[in-house]
Image (tube, rainbow, N blue to C red):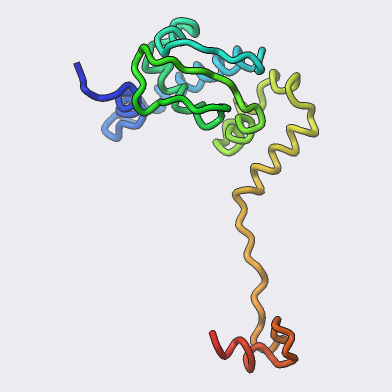
Length: 171
């Protein structure tokens, strides 16, 4: 039996660099379908906190324990209260209390359109709210550079001098 935690075991399978590329792609395609089915169930009643041990939740969603661990790893940043995923065992009690806005934004950030376009979102947020959350998330990753002051432009310190003769000389 391995001394690795459940999360380490999951990550060893999911992110194994020695696995054949096609095999890994099949693994992730299958996982994303499983993930989608779990989210469909959770978003049907988004305000209900799902609780239980890791093993109980795996049984509830009819999954192997390690697949449930992968789901818990992925959803953890979108919960109202994070679960102790680093050291959890099959008997660790976990809760899935979704922070709906954060979950939606994290799905957008992950470019998981198969998740943020689920029809269940329509009963949670209206179209304008979904669009607003989408844009907020997209803008949060955008870095905007301020316009640089040209060397012959007036100095922003309002001295009346050209930038190159004033603050530009200090730079």
